[in-house]
Image 1: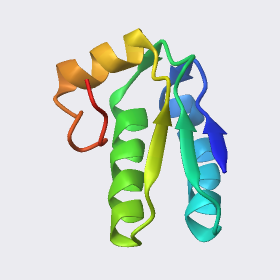
Image 2: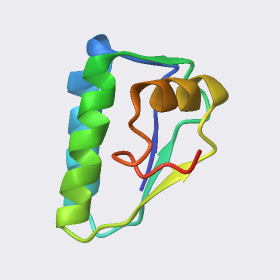
Image 3: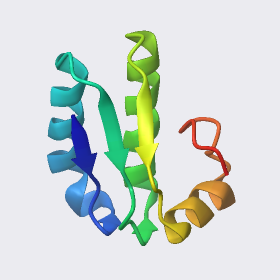
Image 4: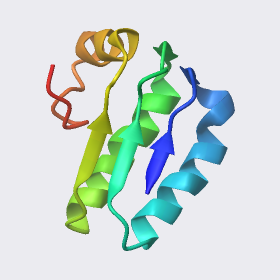
Length: 89
């Protein structure tokens, strides 16, 4: 299951994204997060992704990142979340 993240990963989109992430965790499909168009992210958006990655890990469900955008990677690195999000920078 591929989840395409919106260009702005922020508090306005957290509820919708949470539903998609929950659906992915409950399915048997491979989980791919497409962050290719994410330009910005706030604390709420990143917090949701960290919680999701932790839940996926507990359920032994691998998560693959698809072409994270440079802006997203810069924010993740700045916040020190690359390990928590399991993103290679």
